Length: 320
Image 1: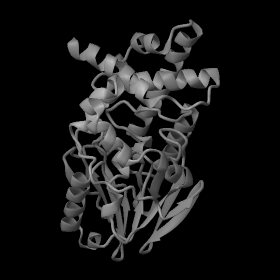
Image 2: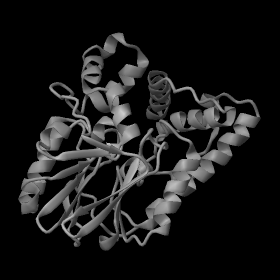
Image 3: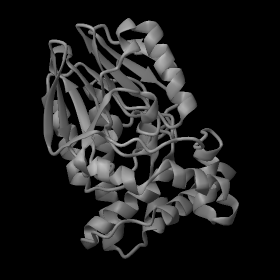
């Protein structure tokens, strides 16, 4: 891994691109990015609540004068920690994949705020969500702010004289994942197609799409990779995540073929090759996703049941 400092705030990538990082990259602490040229700007993602997004925008405007007016906002995927601050980027064209925009309508900030107000009555899934995210972020007062422009598969934009390629690689992490590639700057903003030093989470799948996305990035002339969570990296970070999926798919398949349930399988798989990675409870979601693939089950997962399963795993490991 390159020696980029993993500190909160704006990081100048030296090319007219910037990353905004939120350590420690665990649940809800996502990254964002900025592409600039000729006085024009493109923001990659907003953050999980209005306070975090305001802080990010203030820091970018202080560091980059052109960021006082953001012309374009790209949402890499639908999760709230990359979209819930959209309302604060006033006047910008908001671009996302069509699948991302549709998924955003299904998971609104108002519903999340209501769940956090009533989490005690809503069972173990809501309780674990509240433990890892509800205590960190304030979901009140957020207005669902949808993309104003959508696309399928690919879209080429220009920021000043700089080409920016939006490439849809989902469904993988979510239904409509997009990566933002800036060829001139040899930089890519991956959204949650890349987690660095943290376990990813497969809400949609299939894993084969995620692996193809990794191969796509590895095939580009890229020097700097800004993940959705975790420190800035290079292609080594992409290769590490690809190795994780190759390992997990093989290990899950053995246990599926042996008739083990997904929770038992997740507990039986050694995570020693990824020791030190954050959020190990996400293996529950990932094995569940792989089991659905092995069964050719295309029904959507029960997110709250999976949060409950992660809560059990998390509690067990915390006790040790």
